[in-house]
Length: 356
DNA sequence: TATCCACCGGAATTTATGGAAG
DNA sequence: CTTCCATAAATTCCGGTGGATA
Image 1 (cartoon, rainbow, N blue to C red):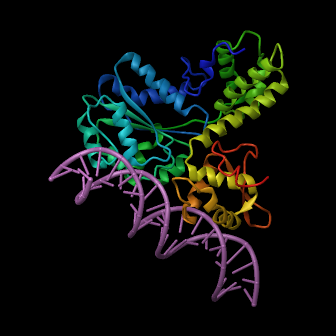
Image 2 (cartoon, protein in one colour):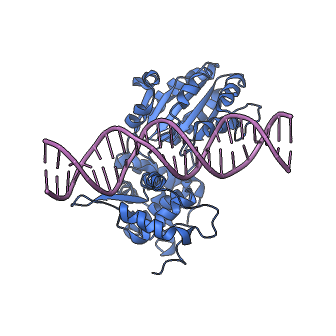
Image 3 (cartoon, rainbow, N blue to C red):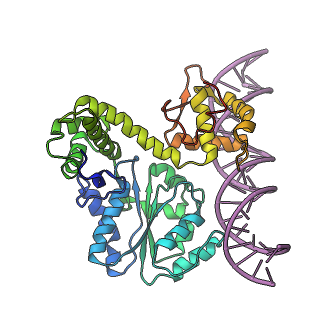
């Protein structure tokens, strides 16, 4: 039923970007100098997840590539230190150097500075919580590399940035992307449907319904369209129907969360499972529960149980990934609970230990 | 209002890890 | 193989916050 799954992939970059003309223009203008071999300007791209920040940067760079050879690197920064970010950047850029774990960060900066024949663009994706705030300081020492920073909350991000770098991302150098309105997202979905689904499987009205359910978040809308098409096939519908959309949306959201949970380390999954099994649960109860379970859970594992302080950081991360919610109950005490009760950790470390 | 208590999160400090040099 | 070094992860320390209580 899906004729071309490629167009529904997360990493798919469309040839034509719908309804991002102004932003595309703005970003192209900032990066334009690189075509002539000059340093591009730094840019901050911000907006909620799934509205096309990454796609915009990839699409823009791909367009520039058509005009000239452009050296660029795209690094996901989530949970990585400055060293890891720099190392991955060097690996992607045309630089001959051996970089490995343990290479001093200043050496990495030096190879980046000395190893390039011409200026390059470094895209720092999901830069929200890079622990090393001085990453920008280090990059400032590399005049030939300009940065495109992608983050969710520009104000929070800028607050962590040194005063001296803050003005770099002023005015034209900050491109905020917002959610699409229903009509716009429906246009985007229409293109995907044309290219990836059989003709007449879905009409405009249904696309608008999907766009509405997804609340203007493109990633959600695109995945919902895909899942709805699969449901329609399972159910023998000739067209996508309303219940295909509703169920498709549920499954799309779950898939997105599953992808999130899979990328997390063991400790995080343990905490997640405890919250899922016992939630809603208060912080104090959760710590006590962890303490009582820890020995059996970590039995035979390479890792050992972690301290309370570290657990707090982990819970924060689980919330950022939209896996756990923090409820302010009416009476004031906070409770944690899973966003999706049915969504188990793939490790599922407690299954055989806990009854029920 | 003053004090206590639990929690949060930043920062300093310690520990583990893997490559490199001897 | 052992020692040394820098990074990254995890722990410890600690000041700030806000609700509860007298």
